[in-house]
Length: 300
Image (spheres, rainbow, N blue to C red):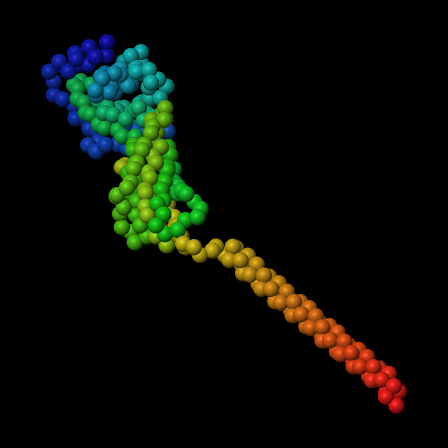
């Protein structure tokens, strides 16, 4: 019905209204209310009952919002726009035919046609783009332990809930762009919002800094995350180093004490042997004296 009415209006031979819509795409934030601007001029004063305003999708010609006979006419409205659209009735006499679209969805993105008739007619098409900001990017890596220079490390940068698809840019500590060994995947949820994951594979240096920058095509740069990874080869971490030093000191002290004990034992053993030898020599000398004393009377 609406399509037939529009065709009939377009068939009228009259000077066209000056209907104006934005030339540049309008950017609407996901989940917020957006105004699709449309104004008209070129007519004298008119009664609201003479005015007809139609908003429709340019590609499918489905009705978004309709107004004629001084009131909204929504019987032909596309179902997904139900309870989400309205005009500005008090501003219609001043030539404002803008549309208020509530709770913008990803599916609302597209070209809209504003058609106005009062005494004569005119129309204009405009493009609305939907934008949703991504979450702050987060960088993780693996493996996270026992890293040393020359290891291959996979850095992962993730962000969620954005639209449209984002561009991910990797940079090193000197600000140089890293484009080799980079993969990216973007998956949309049921609302059309994307989760983005980019993986950079690098060969680790002793100390390396990497940055992940998220670029939104409509909102510009959305965030940056950096990570510094240190790999010290076989150098012990601080805690292990102190434990190693403590164990070495204890072992050295134990060896010194053991050496002292052994030395004392050896000295005591030597002294005992010397004393035994001296006692034995004294005993032998005593026996010899006694033997000599026993032989003397026999000779006389």
